[in-house]
Image (cartoon, rainbow, N blue to C red; front, side, top):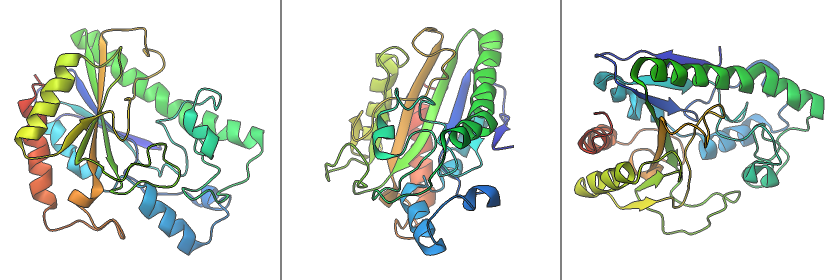
Length: 263
């Protein structure tokens, strides 16, 4: 199974955290198709992994939320992309649902179209079916669902990123005009500011994940992305936690709780 769904530790609320990019796991059969040597692959994993976001956000379960975690690296497949490269802006730099280029533009893998289609069928589609099922179960139980898209980002822009501005905030709140209530985005901004973070909305990244079955069609599904700058909590050259990791995690928990997102 490429993902894990963790149950809440307290009475359930209509909220689910989604952690898509925390893993460095690459199965042997995928490693065989990657053209980088081990050293170059290790560097790419350091750049692209949202280090420790599974731990940074696991407290959501203590507030009644489910947690949906991708247990494979985004270099295997990226669940945050559109499956159709024609719809996915990052496909232009070889980083659609199945990456073919590194952050610096090197060839990562050379896949025939039928091999790419197989990766989508075997990995991407079951993942999204399960995520859609989770949302559907919350709608059935509560009549609504809020997804929290849990990420981190590099302190300096990677070459493949669209936003090359070097002045990056501590926290980025990503929104969708259909699925993110204005009141929720504003409450999160205020709560993070109160904790002393520099906060921006939709910069350097924008948007938030909503399963395609509900995307821009079901107003009962809300979503918001929370991105932390990695330099706040880890050594960006290695991914190792900094001594202040627990303090950042606690401040994150206080801010999200104060925003009212969890009810």
